[in-house]
Length: 274
Ligand SMILES: [Zn+2]
Image (tube, rainbow, N blue to C red; front, side, top):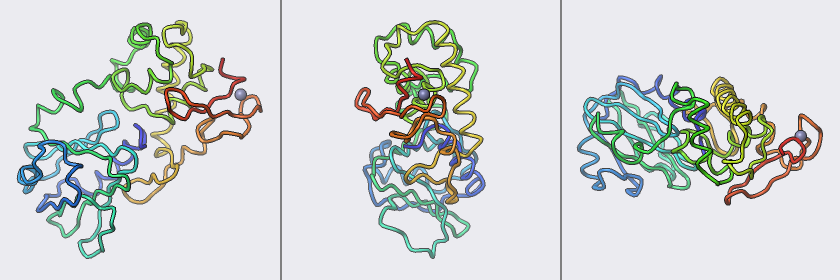
């Protein structure tokens, strides 16, 4: 699943491709992706004729700002965007096509069909689901050590599960939680409320550092992720634990273990993470 660095990279590449382009027509092959308004005809009528002025990111969501509305898109497991000439054949995983006035098409492809799209009037987008309950962005001022302490002190969940909760901090997923916990020497099954102040300070620092480095590297390419110009990210070369089960820890040389935490595959060095 694309996490903050991958969505940020997709945002940046899409900006070069669709900003100031006008949506002439929309074709929807898989209506379940459209969540609001739930009538796909209404969705089309609202969006058609509007120009894409800007793209933002909030957590793992892309926000396309149009003339009067904002289109909120979540890629979930395997969703991706590409811009193609109209003449290029549409593959079977293409579920929504935004026909642009310059002869190109912005196509949303999703092998798993789990992605979502919502459209709201500009100004309403943060007042209703899916964006209304998101926690702070890791790179914004509101994400302080004190904020993280307060959130973690209140919960007995495993630290891994707490960090995956998008209401605690927005944008983290399986890859970057495993990496930030390794860098902070914290075992993913520690109870969030048991972490010391020093551990939370370290974790806060490593969340920001890990995500920042991954954004610089264009994200992590594992399985199918590519940006919207077909380029792969490079952060997979920097991974310490994620996807490295049975390989040697870069820090101590012991073997990396894969386990389940809250039903999520979790990578840990049992020697480095206590
Ligand atoms: Zn180790």
